[in-house]
Length: 546
Image (cartoon, rainbow, N blue to C red; front, side, top):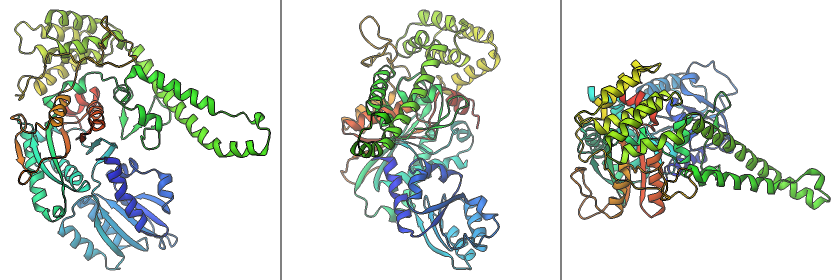
């Protein structure tokens, strides 16, 4: 499975089959969905001359120049979009309308469109299943930044249906017969799974010819809150933690936005999951490659050399731009690591995650919180990790940790966030297996500068719970009391493809593990309501901010 290619193939089919010059109308969500898998230059090759939001087009003054254009609408099947489409069809701006919904559309919505199309402008209405954000080949999101707190209050929140719609579109896009399992600890995951199963039953005609078998496993983020809290040291994870990635766009300081696209950027494709310690060598090799291709104009001596220069110069310029882009990104990461004193600070968070040593950890946490070089976010990070590990221990000194946090500039807010983190993901959440597994699975990155005396990587000791799940799937150990079934495959069929979905947000680290598993032959993708770093996880899920 490849989420990018799955969505691209739908859009490719739409654009190829609608001939002549055309305008594309999107809504706020589908514009992001399409931009992640299709560039503007690629759209131009399909005679797309105008791209607009549907909501803006509705209020536009009629223009004779537009009336000859074909109009392709790629929209989510929401009542607001149906309302805007009906308004557009009542006073059409374009020649013919090709309407594509990103998921199953209700019959009542089709009836409303038919009544509005009194000019008979609609040529086709079709369902294409592209209702997720395809962030890379093995990772997708449904674009819901905060969900657990609101869904715990009311499960009829529209976010619930948005999650189900995203998962349903993935099943349809890959043409899957699917079983569904859910996190036994989570009533939310059970509710999502039950609603998804009903939606499959209600649209059973879509699955009559499907032969590929799959398993969807729904996991509550509270089952493993450690992965979004810890620093993870792959390229993409560090970028998201330090700079922030929003729909594959990174903005360093106030400079121009940088697009991360593994389809068009060979360096990023090869290194998005590379360990930080290996990135320097890879980037140096890229710079050497660019330098080797450089040809000075004064060195051109004949016509053949000139022809070669003209042919290779655009490729050289493109590679040079890629090198400059990643130089800027790596510089931002390196500066942050230095300014935040991460090389000294980060090993402690890993130790708390993998070993039980309260006295040692308490001393380290207190020293870190009192260290002015440690940012507020990192002080909170280490406090949450300590509190989650030792919450159930008598004389756990958590009040002393709070006292140290109070002494910081934003101490009141930080203590509130710590209390909420304990309530959100502490012992009150009954997990099917322990949060802290008390084992260290050291990474063997070649060049990481944080190797201990035994040559092991002290920055990457912790392994997410997702890794152990992947190991079970590789061994075909599908049955577990931790993940009871809501829906099963018929007869003796076994799943061949796997979709793991985190209610409460996935991480790039889990995406990295999925890439590794896929390279070993396991056909797996990971999705989440959003993709978290420490900041977004605390703000959106723990604190419940929208």
